[in-house]
Image (cartoon, rainbow, N blue to C red; front, side, top):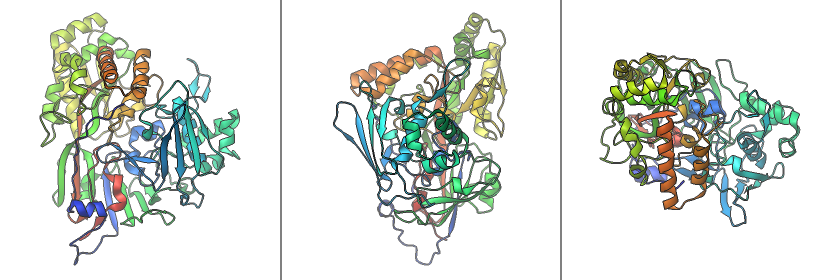
Length: 573
């Protein structure tokens, strides 16, 4: 898709822009550098593998972008930024779309094994969708990948095992314009670890030959072998390809990242970063002076005192939304439309979604009327007219539509990751608005909530940001937003399926003609407002704060989070 205009929202912690660009810190004589910085972010540390459904939906990118690097990473404005420390990627002429990748010759994991094109082959295989097994409703993917966007269009990855070079060739009839969203930070996993644990002598050969037993074992490890739970980690499975590596993890003490001694790029400015996720007691961490950087949903933590911080609330790239089931109480499209007709989108934006100092148009300027078109895109206003019917609560229309659905007095269970003060108020406001239409809304938020519960029938809707992420989310290219509604994708928790929508997104990814984009985006938005697989509310507001004395902090209200440049942070006191 054509990238929309970027509305840059940057919050710089006590440092001049020139100093930020050079990585230096001026005027700090008489202050001592603190050797460790705490980073509080409302992602959930659940998986090292950011390409898996669990990793993507929990927000791994906001935690591990400087631990597992890739050819590109998500920058502070949601753009894809080339990381030449990892390697270079360029599109080359050819009958089919072809990308040449060259890994940095000095690249080596923290366990001493060089990075190689083997890692790219595993990444492609996991996301390609071509490795399947029989299921009750037909073939199901062996790999639990978050999405297949772009990867499914690749015909082959030319790679000599152990080489630093790879050539990616797309299918003759396919083209993927946002190819910089492939092989990105947090998504390129160490193939040598998967091969070792899965007892596969050569992962590249096994995948290229489609050896069924070997591929099954690789998939089993890829799906669960990098899960991070309450038990202690086998650190031999978690090598780093970035400036930081994992030293330890516990729910009580957080994720401890330390400088990676084998990192070949610029050394991390601070030797230790401790990440506290959504499950931490943020109030206690702040009062204990354990946190130097805060990146959370606005108003999500009740009575949080950020005195001693430079703090600002900004609109994020993530789309606050309700993801609806397509079975059970929402098995009929009329039931989904009826619910949307009573959701007070304008009132929710006014009370909970409005960030300070936003322009009259653009990101965060009003209720979000699109699921896949950026609010500051030139296409936005022209493609979102169908949303007007659903701006505010219309009880008579909701009641009539509900009668057509033959679903009298339905109960809607809305799940989200708790505690979250703003989302609890969101559910409360929706419940109050929908009561007159005969719809009962139940707050099903829980500390152990996960978006997969939607497909299991344990809730009827998920309240979260783009692709059901609890915290940092969204990007300029919007690949995750688009993928979350494609048939069969891991991030499609509501199990929505529409062949025409799938075809539209394929065309959007291949044709950058502005007239074609406008027509396709308009058709997509009309289709989605008609089928109602989700209800967009507003650009998720993010509160980002830097402690006094924190230098080189730059807000990242996107899926990469404010930790996108944590290796440049310096705290002096």
